[in-house]
Length: 223
Image (cartoon, rainbow, N blue to C red):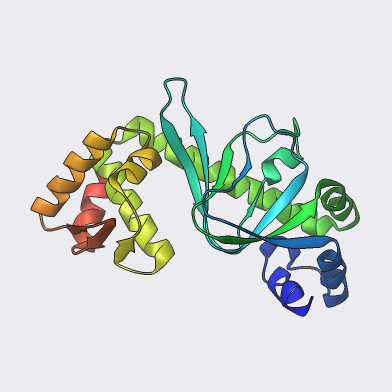
């Protein structure tokens, strides 16, 4: 129980709660382990719970009418997901899938609603989390409209590097990058090969090493 409470104390939406209030949240929260590939929900499923990621990575994605996969975002420990369905139409709008083995805290919808009503500070941070997710979605939409694939891919590599705090990005395939950009694998491979020929990156087996961060920044800033 104490480890769960210690973890919940680090989550942004609970930052304004007292230790006793955090402990109460912990009592209403279950923790479970899930294998890589587990599908937490899919579009149009009813939004019944809030997920809090303790360990592992989760991807949120959509499927286009022609069958292409578009990764909306990758979530890391400390992130919440499923919260968009707890407001509005009460339905999930994306697929949520474990990229690797995950440890998840789960809160029931009714408990989340009670907390939002009784604790305005939590409601405010909840709204901030929704706003941040919408801001990220708008940024990606803007990039897809106004930037070409090389600029978008360079920006993606830099963002992943910052999130992982490393120049060596492991476990990423060309198809994965294509899914993140909403383009075709062949286009992504061609662009990565071009980056490598310019000594911006080094391509390995399911890995990309950033060699010239400043050079990638220049590409990312282009239209």
